[in-house]
Every structure is written in structure tokens, then in C-alpha cells.
Length: 323
Picture 1: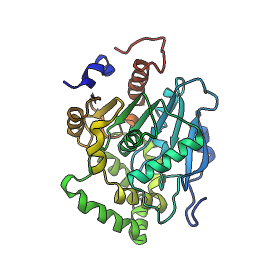
Picture 2: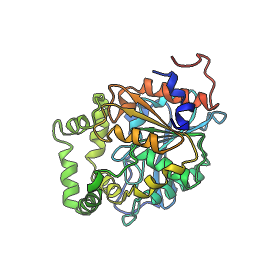
Picture 3: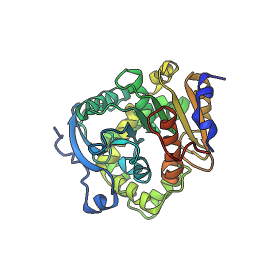
């Protein structure tokens, strides 16, 4: 048994480039997202769209939320109001995704993205006490921590993607993704396909998750934009996780691996492997949930996040421990 098993609190729980415009926020967005506000921030050579709710809550601990490949800050819609009572929140769209843009010739590798995000956090004067990353966002959180750019009390990975996608075929898939990203025709075809009836729903079903129609529409809106499709493919083309995987053993902060047992995107067995490899890792299974677990059951995932924060002395909830 590694040390994480002993400390696991969950054991008791059941300048903007030309030609690229960031996604604008319409009135419907602002009306539906009662908590938090959007703004554009230039940092690290990237034009970021940031959703934040910390100006009015400066005494609360700081929580950074990092979405996964192909998503955006909309993926936190359900869980945001459930965390806002306890935390200062900050969530950016990753470069090339949704409302964040990046220079055309910028290589969105994991180290480069971590460098850009560190610049954003410095600009925002936001030092996170807790970081929650979904899928590739978890790898980004780990990279930032290993590089000493952030020093949170703990990291939480929701179906974290720490291992190369495609396994042994990863070396082949990266150049294919790069070729697709560089082909304007392919990018436009993929964006048009998202507008076809049922296309996005079928894509989401392949994650093992059942999300609301509203959530599906948010993904459809993004995937219909060639800029977003291109940014997603470019990230996949340059996202080499092998160096990170070798370094995870020396991760200096507790890592909580929340694993949807129905995840069809990141095999749940990977979390078990990481739990054995990383001394400060703890695995907690989410029965019946898929890759988008935080969108399927935001209340359950928020309870776990609040409990982790409480165990690390970041918050004090009057209702006591979870059962």
C-alpha cells in the first residue's frame, strides 16, 4: 500500500493573431452562467478567454479548473455554482479552444502550454490552492506542479489523461493529427460534420457519458467552429506525454484520481497503474460515470472536491464529513 492510500480522504466517501477571433459571449451565455464573468486576457503570447469569480471572494481558497482536449470552460457549467460558495474560481479556455486563441505557428506542446498558463496565472495574480484538471487538463496541472510554477495543496484529476493516447500507436497518431490540423479542407469538413443531426451526440456517447441536451449543444457550438477544431487537432499533434509519465513518480503533492468506471476515452485501468506508481496518488472510482463524469453528476463530483479541500484545511463546511 502506498502512502496515498493512508491519506486518502475519499476512503470515507461513497496580441491576438489575425484571422483568429475568440468565441464571443452572447447574452444567453451570461444569463445562463449566473456565477462568474468572462474576459479576454493577453499573457504568454496567447489571447485567453478566462472565466473567473474571485474578485468578490478574496478570503476564500483559490481553485483552478482546467478542461480537457476539445472542450472549454463550458464543461464546468454544472459544477461551477456548487463550488463558488467555498472558492475563488478561475477557469481558462486552453489555447486554440473555444474563446482562447494562439499564434498560428505556435506549437501547443505540454511544456509550452504550461508556460503560457503560468504567465496567465501571474498576470491574474492567481496562486491556486487546489487544482482540478479533467483529462488532458490533469496532465497540464501535473506539469505546472512538477516545474514548480504552482504549489497547490493537492491536485485532482477527473479521468486524467496522463498516458499517451493510442498506446503503442501514439507515435503514429501525432503526425496524423498534425497533418489533419494543417489541412484546412479536413478541418472545415470536420466542423461541418458537427452540424449534422446526431453527430455530436454520437461523439459524446463514445466517451461513456450521458450528458444533458444543453451540454451537447455547447459542444456542438464549439465543434462547428473550424478554429476550435484546428486548435484541438494541433494540441493532439504536439501533446507528448512520455516525459511527464516518467516524471510523475516525483510529484510533490497529493494526486487524487477520480475515475469514471464507464470511461471509454481514458481506460480506467490507467488510474490503477498510476496509483501504484505514484507515492502520493489515491484512486477513487465513480460508478456508472464516463469520461465526462463532472458533467454527468456535478453535485457528486463537487461533494468530493469540497471534501478533499476540507481534508487539506482549505474550507470548513458546517455539515461535516461526507458519508
